[in-house]
Image 1: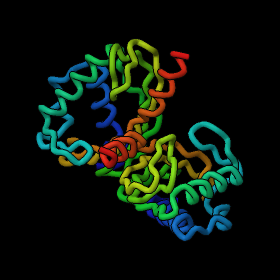
Image 2: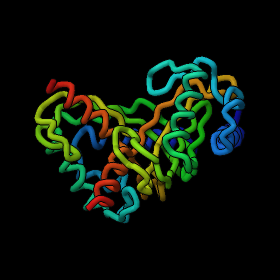
Image 3: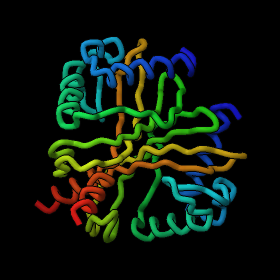
Image 4: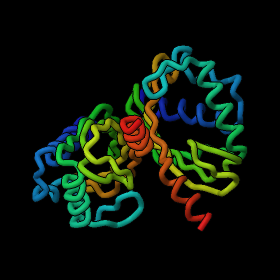
Amino acid sequence: MNPNELRTLYHGYIDCLNSRNLDQLGEFVDADVEYNGTRVSLAGYQDMLKRDFEAIPDLYFNITLLCSEPPLIASRLDFNCTPSSTLFGIAVNGIRVQFSENVFYQFHSRRISRVWSVIDEAAIARQVKEARL
Amino acid sequence: MNPNELRTLYHGYIDCLNSRNLDQLGEFVDADVEYNGTRVSLAGYQDMLKRDFEAIPDLYFNITLLCSEPPLIASRLDFNCTPSSTLFGIAVNGIRVQFSENVFYQFHSRRISRVWSVIDEAAIARQVKEARL
C-alpha cells in the first residue's frame, strides 16, 4: 500500500466513526488491536468508542494533520464538543471544549492493529477551570 | 527531500537536543518557528528547551515511532526522567516518571517551521499521585 492508499483507508475509518457505524468497525480495526500498549480487541475498541459517544453526544473527529508512511499513519485530530458529564476525570458538565489528539496507527493487512494516542487532557482541564471563573 | 532524508535530518535535531548543543539549534529550527499555534521564534524555542533542561536535569529524547512524509514528520518520544521540582504545574519533586509526547513537525527549507505537540501530562500526574500513596 502506498501513502495515498493508506490515507484513503484511514479516511474511511474516520468516516465510520463520524457516522456512528460501529458495526462496520471490523472493516478497519484488527480483531487483536492494541491501544496504548494494552490488547483491547475489536470488541473492547467498540466499547471504548460507545462510551466516548455516550460521554460526548456531539463528538466529531476532525483530521487536521496526516502523515502517512505505511504501515504507519499519524493523525492530529481536533475536537470541538460538549462532554455531558465527566471526561478523563474532569467534571466538564456541558461546557464546550476544544482539544487535540495526536495519534499513531500501525496497520496490518489493511486494518489498524496498534494505536498510540496522546490526548491533550490538560487543555480540557484549563478550559473548564476558565469557564468556572 | 524523500522520507529517509527527512528522517536523517530529524535524527540530527534530536541528537542536537540530547547533546545539549543549543547553539547548533538554528541548523534545524527556522527563525520564525511556531509551536502549538504561537510564533515563538528560534530564540524562544531555545529558551523553552533551556527551561526544560533546567527543570529535568536527566531529560533525554528517545524516539520510539517515526512517520515521515515530507514536509511532515510525526514522532513519538518516550521520556524516563526525574523532574527536580514542578513540571506542567505538577509538583514532581524528584519522582521518576515515564511519559510520552506525540508530536508533528513541518519542515521548510530543511528546518522545522511548525510544531504541534501533545504531551501526556495526565500520565505524570497519575505517577506522582501513586508514588505519594
